[in-house]
Length: 494
Image (tube, rainbow, N blue to C red; front, side, top):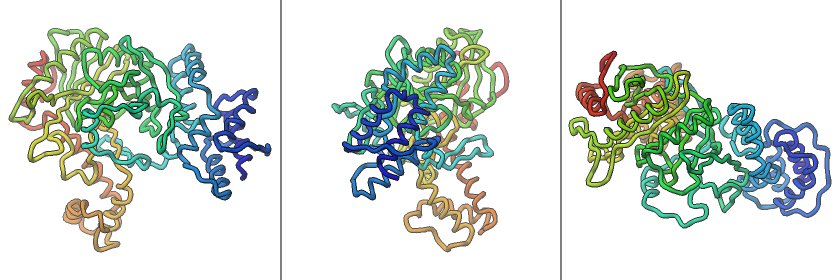
C-alpha cells in the first residue's frame, strides 16, 4: 500500500459511505494531500471499499512509517476523515431532510454517518468486554478510555477556563484540533430546548445504541432547576424514540463534565427503565399522574402522565428532596451553604404520555466515607472508584480497562495457576482472600466466580448510592420523605 493508494481508497470509501459527490472527488483528494503534507499524487486502483475506514487509515500510516514520516495517528486520522466528510452545514441540512421522513430515520442516518466518518470509534468500542449479569445489570470493561479521578472532577467547579474551546464538549470543538486532542470530524445538530440553543452530538465511545449528548451552546455549569425537565421533554418531543437524562450536577454524585450543562441519551432501554414497581404512590396535588417507587438498587421514582402534570409533580419532589433531612439515615441537605442533595431526571415518551424517572442523589462525605457516603465504598474501589453517573445509576456499568489485566490475575491465582497476585495488584488481595475462603482454589470455575464477584460488586455499589437503604431506618426515612413530597403509598409496601 502506498500513501497515494490510501488517498484514492479513502475517497472511494467516502463516495460510498459519506455521501461525497463524485464532483467533489478531486477537491477531497487535494484536501487529503494537504493533510498529509504532499504536493504530488498518482491515482491507483481502489477496489471495493471496506465497511469501516480503519484498514485504509492503518495502511496510510504504515506507508508513512516506511517513509520515515512522523505523525500522530489519532490526530492525523481525524484530519483525513474530516477532509472527505460533509461540512457541518451540509450535515445539518441532510439531517433536516431525514427528519421530514421520521426522527428515527434521521438519528439512524446521523449515527451511521458518525460511525462511517470514524468519529464514533466502532472498532475500538467492539473490543470492550460486555455482558448482562444475572442480577439484571449490564457491565462493560471499557478498553477505550482512561479512568477518571473524583478530585479532578471537583476542581472543575472552581476553575474558570479561558481556553478556546473552554471545555471538551463546547460546540467550538467542531472541527477543532490541538496537540493530543482532535474533533476535526465531529458533526453536530442544532436543537432548541427550553427556548435556548443546544446541540446534539454522538459519543465517540458509545456505551449503547446511538449514545449521544445534548449540550448547551453556552459554557455554563451543569444545573438542575425549573427548566431542566422542560428541556428534557422538549428533547423527547423531537426524538420520541430516545431517552434523555441529566447527570446529577454535583461532584461524587454526578458525571465527569460538571463545568458544562448537558444531557445524555440515545436509542436504548437501560436496566432501570425495565425494572418493576416496588410500591405504587398517589399525589393528591397531581391525581392524574401515575407514580411509583421503582424496584431498583438505588432510590428512584417513576412518574407518568401529561407533560404539565409530570413536570409539576417532579418539581415538588425535587424541592422536597433538596431540603429533606434525616441524620439517622445520614441524609443532610447542606453543610453550611454547600448543597448535598440533588437528582438525575430521565425522560422518554410512552403510550401513556410523558415518563420521568427521578434518581435521588446526595454527595455528603464523612470520616468513615471520605470519598462519599453515597458513593462506592472503599472496599469496592478495586473494581470501581469513579463517580456513579447517570448511565451507571441506571444499571449500565462502565468499568476501567485495567480490570482486564487485573481480573485475569485474580482468576489465575484463584485457579491455582500461580501462588500470589502480581506486584501492583495488591488491592485485589481482600477479594481474592474472600473468594478462596468461599470457593477454595477452583480451576474449573475460576472465571465464572470472578465474573459473579464483579456483578455482585456493581450491585453493592448501586446499593451504596441509595439514599434510602432497604432496612428499617431507610424505609422509615423514605416514608417520611414521601409524605413531605405529598406522596402516599396506594399499593404495595416499603
